[in-house]
Amino acid sequence: MPLNILFAARPERWVIYERPLRDALEKAGIKANLSTDIPAQDVDYIIYAPNSDLQDFTPYSRAKAVLNLWAGVESIVGNETLKIPLARMVDPGLTKGMVEWVTGHVLRYHLGIDSDILRRDAKWEYRTPPLAPERQVVILGLGALGKAVAETLVYLGFSVTGWSRSPKTVDGIDCLHGEDGLKEALSRAEIAVLLLPDTPATQDIISSETLAHMPQGAFIINPGRGPLIDDNALLAALDSGQIAHATLDVFRVEPLPADHPFWADPKVTVTPHIAAETRADTASEVIVDNIRRGEAGEPFINLVDRKLGY
Image (cartoon, rainbow, N blue to C red; front, side):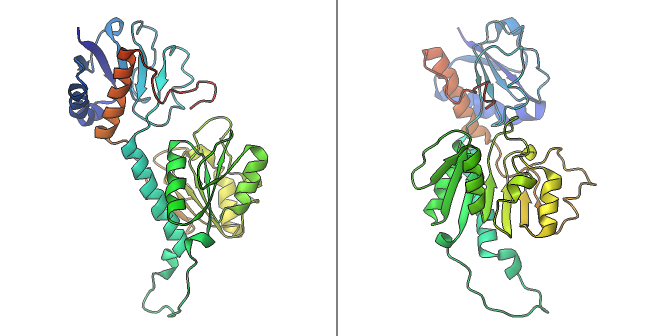
């Protein structure tokens, strides 16, 4: 009997995902009724985006798991009607995209590319940029994305420190954790990359207090979550020169409001939440693998820890 798989996301996502999901199901040998309209009591799996109209999971009494299309789960993890397993998206395509975007911006800051672009009337001066081993890069967050970014930067020769809330071990990376570890990590951070989830414990982790631990003239790259940064504290640190420049891809409100001071600050680069996007083909394979696991009685992968919030 075919599985009933509900696609619960906005219509534009269905257009993008329908064919890759059907192809992945066929490749896995799974017979399924994949649709955006299935009676709640008949649904076996829910492929889900948190901005979907579906917010009450109570009627889905037969469903075995909710398979999130996004890496972020902060807007669904606290839903009290959701009693079944919730899997977040860990997509190889998204991970590769994040690695490439972060690496590009780290190299931009490391090499001083912005300042090396001359106007015709500028003074012609030679300088010797530092090599990667002379540059300290700190990654806040050592989940799948942070680990992949850190390993790539180590491969390029950078001196990389990683920080996480709980102890982690990654080959070639000095891994710190906890409050004291955060202070130590930031004290090294000539370039800081924020790849933490949005949880009550990580909100405003970049504050006036933590910014003060960073070296004078450091750089910040945030492709993680907007609430990680206290906006006013960052603006003050940019104004004082404590932070030389910040590249921000995520914000508390998106699109970034037209009157937000980030737009007018020459020391801020704003990008429109493009650092990493879930790729329909690779994400569909991840989702279908979890459906296969559920039907085979194997453990689901990428399960969310409700207590931790990710």
